[in-house]
Image 1 (tube, one colour):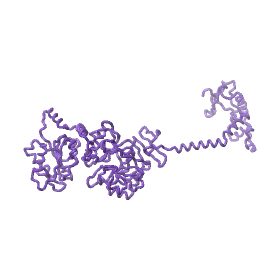
Image 2 (tube, rainbow, N blue to C red):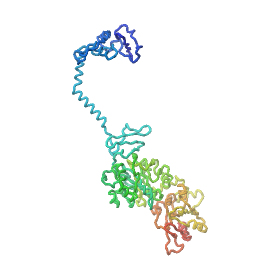
Image 3 (spheres, rainbow, N blue to C red):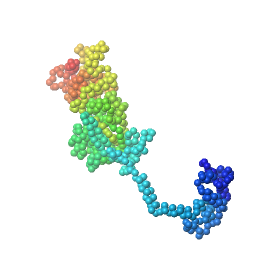
Image 4 (tube, rainbow, N blue to C red):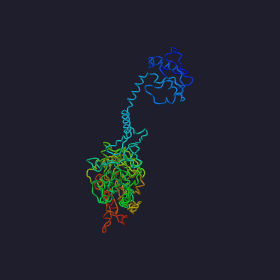
Length: 628
């Protein structure tokens, strides 16, 4: 420190700062080292801050030898504030405890009695009982305020949010604990909160459904809900499906209903959330809507406990509505708006009409503006739009159905997935194209052009465009290419003698300009190969099945013929769909008992699942196709 000198302890005194021989003041204590160095101001009085009279007194006092006299017991009594102990006794008392004698005078030795009286009086006044109580009260209040500062919940969602102190670290993670009823703990990464237990998640209050667009129906928005997966549906004897979900709706309105967590069965068509359905008599609550069956709870933990009740478990099994997860141990809460993508992965045709025919007008609207959601979840096919090669997922990917929306992955059966904002594309809302104007020819044509370009399909969609290409290339449009599929590789309904009758037809003179292409199994072809096969066809004749959905890749004015014993017309055969396609559909079914051979195209059914077709009936079928 500047303007300071080291004080060396001596046997007799300290060096006086008034000594004229200032140049002889030692700088360092060679005997004791730095631990015993004491710094005082320099010899200049203006800098020392000590009055001259006191400094001279310090010099005089330091010259006295300390006394080693032991203080008598009678001198150990109370100290008289007006008659303090003499300096020699104070030093003797210190010496009796084995401490080295200090050359620095005590404070009492530097000031006279009057100053001491002022000091004692000031201390007594400050340390009065009243002041001590006030100080203690202030201290206690400060401590209580520090301990009991509550976390502030989000007003719209009763789940604590992290404060600025809980902002993500460099690796994107943050940890947050809320204090209050039921300690809440979660880890947050990229707007997803991870709870290690449903008990660590506070109660939520659900909202919705509200329409995503007031003019377009079929898409709904829910707030603060969780999704479950129906694990019985894939084992349904008739029409197994991957499209059924359960929606946990959080409210206290149903807290006294012991069956609040049980979804209704899938036996009815539920086209409205507010509709009334038969199973409500059993579960005592609203059923929800197609593909999204309602369940009610006060919290994630409450729902998990409710479905574990034996009676509820048995009802869910009876309804074919066992839900996963069954025993919830973790919760993932997605704060970013999320789209629920669901469809039947076992049936491409159902997926096309149940999901896409509802979503198409929204896709066009979002494409022109922006997508209101940043992620999607699909329990129908894992990684559907990110890496799956499922035919319907590939179609969605190629048409850029969701652009850069993130495809969320789902994990183990003990994790419950919940969402702050969930967009639900109502399953089957426009399955039969009954909502006029929902999918216009312009929107559907835009979809097909998009697919033709993305798959690099060789034939132009419209007749006019194909005629222009043929003129440029010096070709004509003569000749007919017919694709045939007997579905023989499957255990379901199939055409047993198709290859035989096609071989006979090829020998006929009238079919020399007809190219017959028999497909053994569409499942052996990639999605792009299937698309190209349909694109190159002038007509498609096949047993009804999910691969008929590839019609979306066919050109305008293609003829489609479905064959089988059943008279049920497939979804592709809907006249409204054929109108969008600028194409035609004909259904060939069981022959009448009194029919005249060759008078009509029909099949001879061996049983409900197997049939044949005679050569005259086949000729009639092909002649009708060529005529169109």
